[in-house]
Image (cartoon, rainbow, N blue to C red; front, side):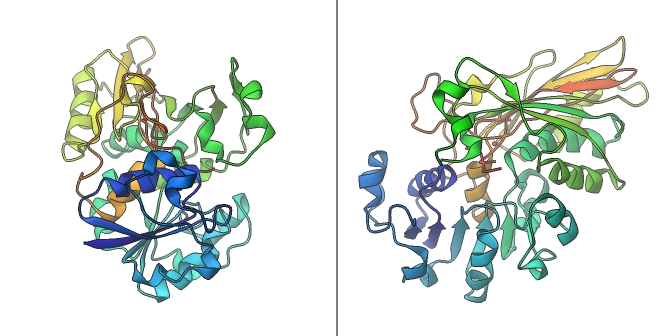
Amino acid sequence: MEKVAIIGASGYTGIEIMRLVAMHPRVELVAVSSEQFAGKEVSEVFPFLAGKIRLAFQSLSQHTDLEKADYAFVALPHQKAMEVVPGLLRKGVRVVDLSADFRFRTVAVYEQWYKAHTAPWLLADAVYGLSEVYRERIRGAALVANPGCYPTAALLPLIPVIKSGLVTTEGIVVDAKSGVSGAGRGAVLTSLFAEVNEGVKAYKVGTHQHTPEIEQELSLAARKTVVINFTPHLIPMNRGILATIYATLTGKAMQEDVLQCYRSFYAESGFVRICPPGTVPGTHQVRGSNYCDIGFAIDDEPDIAEIGTPHLVGCGHCPRRAYPDKTALRVKPAIALQHIFPGRVAGQGCIDRPQNATVHGYKMGCEINHNRLLCRE
């Protein structure tokens, strides 16, 4: 029985990890921290976990059970995670970090988009936690950096077609729509119901901090520098991401080439589903599940392929970082709002036009695309 601790367990990502861990037959949750609810029983704060988790939240500074854990999921805001992770690693605890603190290969990029990094020596050993791409490295990693929500939505559809050379790396456009939980659980004016309901808006146009994360991973896949055009939008739903991605096809790639590319790349990835040709997925079909659906279409006139992918992001990835099997994640999509926190975060897509392509998707977590819980930005 593996022992797990969740640090920052009362935020959206922490809640989802508690739910998933509680369903796993080979995992024992031994510690949960929360500054806001320190001293209160988990079931008192989150009644839907009554009978599943019999622990009380404790303040991180006063927690006495963290050293009992084999794994720790750190669901703290950016900058806060890097204060905690080094100490856990020194104690021999393997860590999955949900913040952006360890996602980048170089400290200069992180500090350009976030703030000063206080544990840069760990970046070289951290493994980027996109399990569909880095599965084998994740298995033995001491520190896994869980991907952001928008990056999951963009990377799952783009990496296969870039690696295979089916699309060019110039002119890629990622148009993504995210649910409100991606902003976190704190009371923020722009996330209030009356501010979000019945409206859609773009935000952080050209300045979103997930841009360099997407570009980093696409550049590694392409083995050259990749620059994208990324615009995020906020839409009035709880969680999930739909990403529409446009890219230009190379040569004379046909529908069957793109379809085979996806099927082959994700043959061993049980949570990525490829839609039949000519159809694109929607967020409803992955709601409450760990699935990421990818659909695509090719515009013959300008050679553009359109790909749609709704999926789960962030939290759904986390248990798989530590436990590569699918136990506790085999939840069928909910047809209606049957789950208290339905969704994964991130999206996916493909491309084509005198070879351009469009991709729709949802992601993780956090970060799931999909219907994984949205990760904090």
